[in-house]
Amino acid sequence: MLFFHPLKEMPLKHQMELMALVAIARLEDDAYGVRIRDEIDRMTTRPVSIGGVYNALDRLEREGFVKPFYSEPRAERGGRARRHFALTAAGRETVRRERTLALRLWEGLSPAGRRR
Image 1: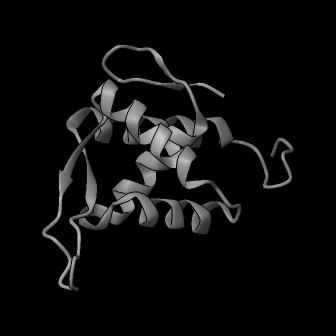
Image 2: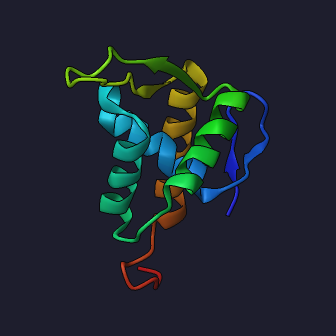
C-alpha cells in the first residue's frame, strides 16, 4: 500500500508511517514513542514493536512530516525528558489527504467488501 507525500508527491514507504502520523494527530502534545506505540496498538488491535515505531518516526522526521521536541524532565528523581513529536504543516496535510483518499477508496463498498 502506498501513501503519498503532499508536497513531493512521493509515497510514504510504510504503513507504519501513516499509523504514526495518525497517532501523533490523536495524541497532540502527549505524543512520544511509547504513547505513540500504545495508540497504534489501540487503533489497530495488533501489537507493533517500539523499534518499528522509532524507525517510522526517524523517516518522518527526515521527510519533514514531524518535528521532535523535548518535554521538561519528569518529576521523579533522575527523571529524564521525553522526546515528543509534533506534526508539521506537511504532516497535517498528509493526514488530511490520506484520510480523504481512504474514504474515497471505500466509497460504494459495504463493510463486507461488496459493491452497494
